Length: 395
Image (tube, rainbow, N blue to C red; front, side, top):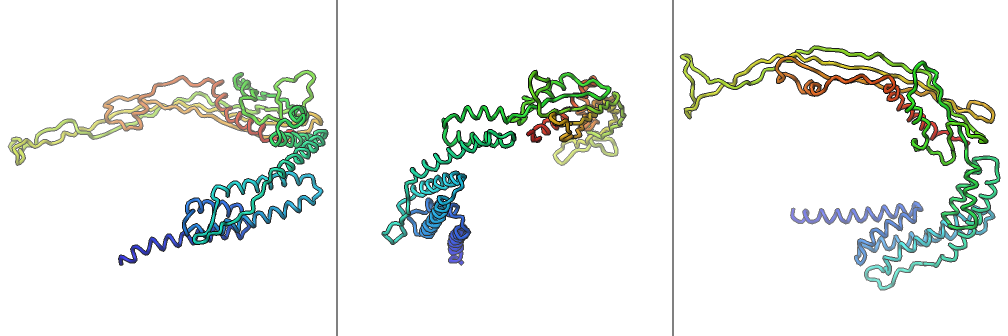
């Protein structure tokens, strides 16, 4: 029995080690070489100098060789390609190959336990290749961006901006990229006129209108879209967005009263137990025996409810100002409920349940104005309107 107690943990360790090796082998044979390298490195860092590190060293060597062979074959293929887009892939490949070497270097030198021969990794200096690929990629991005920027299609103009942005991050200060980005951004911009229409018999709060037309407060994704609430002289607009309030309903102020009877039996002091002759009964220690004195309380609770509702319905229309056609439309709706409770009572407060005691702390309040109700009900309208502006592809 004692032998078995010590044997079990040992078997678990062996099983776990085998399982880890098998996992990395499966990753390797699936062609995920860099993942197999990372997994092997994690194990080697923990086990370096121990016999248990040997399987991971072998896996690291095999995964590295296969990854290098695969990348060199792809580089050779790309070098024979006429597609100028190849430079993005070549640049990425060389960076990854250099990074792979740098991840392995900290665990070197490596050798198997009992074998003096060091495990050799075929490392290379990729500095020249990286610089060459980066230069060619920069030229490719620049030339392609110039071509796209001359298009009359806003989608292609915006692609040009993305290429210039990539180029600026790849090679800051390259030629006149920053100036070009400003010009391309202006050419790719869409100008949209936003208008609010009230088709109801209610007054829309001025505060609500201001917030709906304050596009900066929306956090709207407006890098490519400029919104105007008023026409700017000399400005050509691509789209018009009409937010039409089509229905606003307000209920009258309602106040309801409900009377609730609360009853509860509680202990109110105590009396002494007496025998048949009216004498106080004592316990074995000679102390008078106390008997709880119970009383039944009855209280009236007057529960009041103040209630008022508002309902707002709107329609969003998006029109192309170049041809006057309707691009899309969305129906919006939202409501708000003012539901306030308070209470008073007559009788003994000790009989009242906790849920009603909370209401006793409150007093009657003024009903919100119609303007406030409409404003509160339209908060969701504002959120929905913001989502529409963010999701619409203004091209």
